[in-house]
Amino acid sequence: MPQVFDRRANLAVKVAMLAIVLALVAGALVWGATLREFSATGEPQSQPIPFSHKHHVGDVGIDCRYCHTTVETAAFPGMPSTHTCLTCHSQLYLDAPALAPLHRSATAGTPIAWRQLHKLPDFVYFDHSIHITKGVACVECHGRVDQMPLEWRSAPLLMQWCLDCHRDPRPHLRPPAEVFSMTPKPPVADGWARSVSLQSIRRMTDCSTCHR
Image: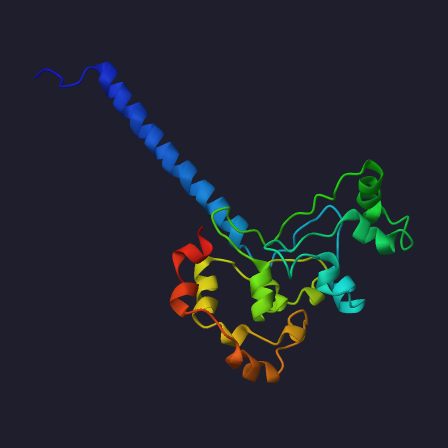
């Protein structure tokens, strides 16, 4: 019985099947790496300068807004500039090896390449200012940074995690004066949260709210 396909055609089919398998494997690896990048929790992350939130926030008591200057007014909270760090470190710990990147940054006039730890995919829109305005405390998403020698992601930042809060945000709200506090939610916050004017749950869970 004659062959339906010649050897060249058989080879092409085998190569195509192999390419499909390799593409699926590569896709799975990329998806796994992407998911890990945006959802891994509890793993301290390295930075150009080993900045300790525990020391600066927990021990010294520096307010979040001192370094993240646009957190109340813009979508992006801002990262500490070289000048901000030198406000203290032009006098303190000048010869500390860990601060060498800071002084190189000042000399070269180039910004510090801070690694953005709480990073969302490009297709997700998130505005810090509206969350701060509505009373979502930093600790709700970032955890107890005042206890982190090196910061790690405490929440998965996955869509379902965000939607759970958007469906019932009031347990996560506190008065404006308490938004930047690392302490547990005060009892008065529950009564205040009930008085907050929120958009409808339908609007807060609509796809276009975060995917624009």
